[in-house]
Length: 354
Ligand code: UD1
Image (cartoon, rainbow, N blue to C red; front, side, top):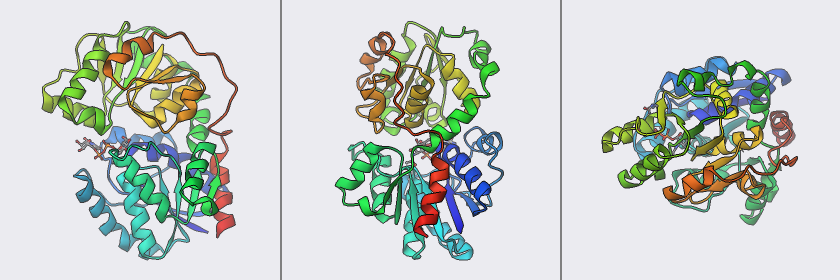
């Protein structure tokens, strides 16, 4: 079996790591295409190195742009790559513009598409990620779902026959990396003069929080006035939008810094008193690490984190301060995100559908 993976943005490199490993262990021929959506070394190369993926086989170098320009450039460039490599499957990951471009290119070339992390829904049609998910799921031939909730969404859209519950590959990578980060816990905090357990870890990057100046100002103000220092690894989108709006990220309790490598982020989360984020991945990582999370959004796709009490939505920036001070949630033994062997099931599902 030959699989061509298309990735382009930071969370996709994390998801690719356990899948690439499972393919290597099973003797699957694997071609990795990087669209170039993320190009800063701290958003891209560091993940390939640190997570042992190796280098991408093909790099399209597409870079940033409006949704149409970026997605269209990838789509145009992918046709020739997919035709040349003629894989049995094109495997796409998550919900970025790279995901949609690869799904559309493959489906039009009559190459089968498998979507990893299928079936997630926010039901918020203003989110670019929601367009990407819905369109990709309906184009794909095989839907690899991370949770029972995702399977339910796929069923209600008439897609059950193509859906397989494999679990969440982010659990695979998190469990492996967590086992090795012990001595790094507190490093990121110490570099900023903070003590383990005495700070919050915050990440903000989504368009709905960064693109509107007034909204961004409210979120930054709220974070800057929390009751503990706030370590803020700043995504380039946040840094760019804050600079354009004249918003200083070094105010109050905020400690902005460069984006962190994966193990450093996990260590920073483990050493924190709580996570504040609009990232999907970090909501789950906090849950799996037993760190309370506050999500700066009106909804989440990862509803299990809310239902189990470890995550709380703070749709208004003014809600963040009370949310981070809430009592620690009760421990849970529930494993909604699988057992850490999702990547192996991805290989089995691809083989079974071949
Ligand atoms: C993308 C995904 C989002 C995902 C996020 C993870 C889409 C629609 N969005 O958002 O779902 O959660 O990745 O990080 O695909 N930039 C740089 N350097 C880079 C990449 C981007 O400076 O290496 C800056 C540029 O100013 C760019 C902006 O970030 O315009 C946004 O980048 P873009 O690729 O459009 O989306 P993300 O916000 O990263």
